[in-house]
Amino acid sequence: MITVFRSNLERSTLRRCVVSCAALLWVLSIASPAVASPETLRRAVSNLLFGPTDVVLGPIVGARSVYYNIQDIDDTPGVRIAFIIPGVAWNGAMCMAGGVLRTLTGVLEFIPGLILLPFEADMNALFAPPGRADALIDEDTKLLEIKIGIDYVS
Image (cartoon, rainbow, N blue to C red; front, top):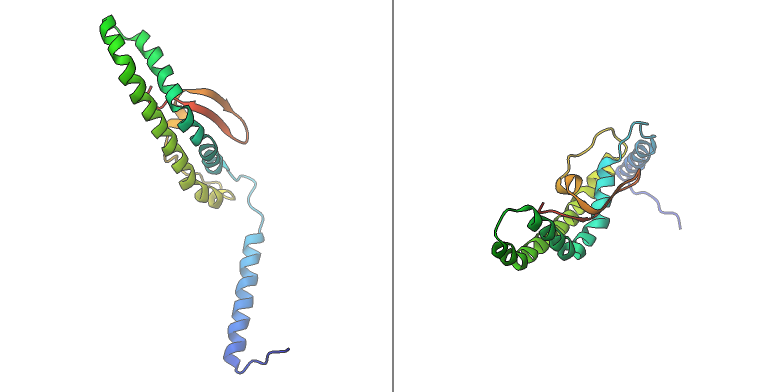
C-alpha cells in the first residue's frame, strides 16, 4: 500500500534523512590512506588474546622468576629458603593480576584501534609492561606481537 505524505514537513524530513544517510555512506566509503597504521589495533588484539594466558601461566611465571632471582641475590641460605614460599605466592599473584590488566587494556584499546585504523595516528599503550617485559614465548610477527607468560615482576 502506498503511503501518502500529509504535509511538506514530512517530505522534507524524509528528504533530509535520505540525503544524510547517503552522505554518511559516501564518507565511510572513501578509501583510507596508504600510510594507515594498525599498531593500536594490533596491540589491543594481542592483549585480548594473550592476556588470559598470562593469568593461567601466572603461577608458573612467578615460580620461574623466584627461581632465577634466588640465584642472583647475596643472602644467607636461611633467607633464600624462607623467601621461596611467600615469593612464589606473591610473584604468581602479581603475574596473574598483570594478565588481568593486560586483558582489560586490550578491551579498552580495541575500539580506539578500530577508529584509528584508517589514519596515520597511534595511541600510546595504556599498559606498557607487555611491550618491554620478558616472556616465556616472545615472537613478533606482522599481524600480532605474541608474548605469552609475561614476567610482570622482574
